[in-house]
Amino acid sequence: MALTDLMDSIVENIPHMIFVKDAKELRFVLFNKAGEELLGFPREQMIGKNDYDFFPKEEADFFTSKDRMVLNGRQLVNIPEEVIHTRLKGPRILHTKKIPIFDESGEPRYLLGISEDITEKKKSEESLHQKTTDLARSNAEREQLKLFAYVASHDLQEPLQKIIGFGDLLKMNSSRELNTKSREYLDRMQVSAFRMGRLIDDLLKLATVSIEKQELLEVDLNKVCEQVISDLEHRIEISGASVEAGSLPTVKADWVQMCQLFQNLISNALKFKRPAEKPHVRIYAERLESGWSRICVEDNGIGFDLKNTERIFKPFERLHGRDEYEGNGIGLAICQKIAERHGGRLGAESSPGKGSKFLIEMPVV
Image (cartoon, rainbow, N blue to C red; front, side):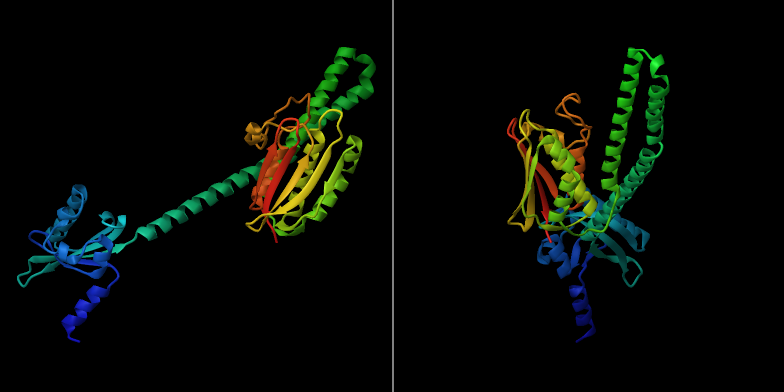
């Protein structure tokens, strides 16, 4: 193979766009195969034409100004990023180097351009940058939650314990000196302190779900359910409830959080019961076509209007007054966090007066 044929073959097969323009009118005199594929025009259609014949005026102005900079400066110009509108691929980002080619007298005769399509590379860099930013934000939020958890478990609980403790001392040592109104105020103060303590505990649980990154292990939900029912045995007995559990799957999960998930859902079923009717809770699983499992916790309680579905999963959102049903409105928010933490989701079906069904969808082992 002759040297000129070898050079032609190299230019033709280099994966980057290579083009040559004449120095006088900046018309294309050479184009390789990669250039054709990138711009979407056959080289025969481009030879003898200039940038204004193929690109928007603003784009052509930019390309031409860089060409003149190369020829007037008589040296290479590196353009790290330039946008070019192609015929078939839409806007692309190029990294281009333009070099003057001189004649025998030392004057610029041609302009050589080499352009690498870096569009996908830029997308990958931006994606990586976004992921890094999101990770940094997530870590910062986790550190804030850790700080809150520490404050909640120590600094906030201590003054509450003192309020409750000194209230007990007043009742024990000064009960005779207090009139009926004063004792009522004291009782209300302690009830508020107890309620505040429960609120802090619930917030701590919500924060802990987001903070903890325990290794997920195989967890038999049948055993989880057995333990939770055993732990709630006294409440179940007092309310006269019945809890029926079917066969449940094994999942990759955090044992403690699975217990918390089932405990919150069963406790809700016991709490939101219809007057003069004993609660009945049914727990069962369905296999989905996707291979996931849907675990259902179904009750015969008061139910709720489906238009409030989003509200019940938000922290502190309550559909009923505190006088009707105790609690801080955090339990279902914790349940949803736990489901999401395990790559699953939590939904609900219900209607007023006809019970509720909470649906946990999770991948199974």
